[in-house]
Image (cartoon, rainbow, N blue to C red; front, top):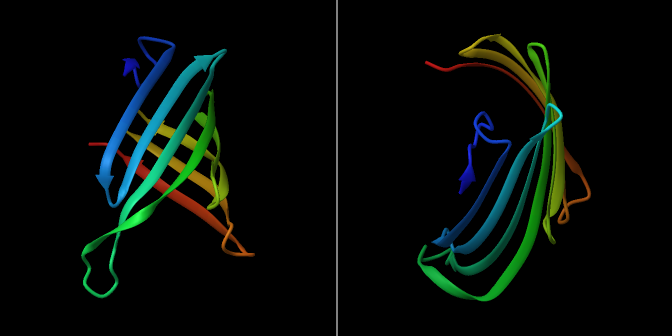
Length: 140
């Protein structure tokens, strides 16, 4: 890791992660976040390779022929007074993509209202999944 994840002490945050045999995958992920002219921009790149899957009868791990996929995510957030506007797009090779837009409304330091809309397109389906979320978050 490099920098401050909340971008309060440094204008850039970068990290690199590697997971081995987590739910049958080896994953390498690089992420970068920066604050430029009041806009918080983020990006992530992920490469994953399936190393095993679970047998449907015995529930035991079974080795598989290595299947790999690459994906990325881009995000942006912009504060306007007590409102934070957000947008995100992600794509995973041979699986599908999704995008989201939303906003947070600060009611005070520990509390916010939020709402978002997400559209997800899976390559295995002709129909898009659409989600609307509304919530209240309070941190104790």
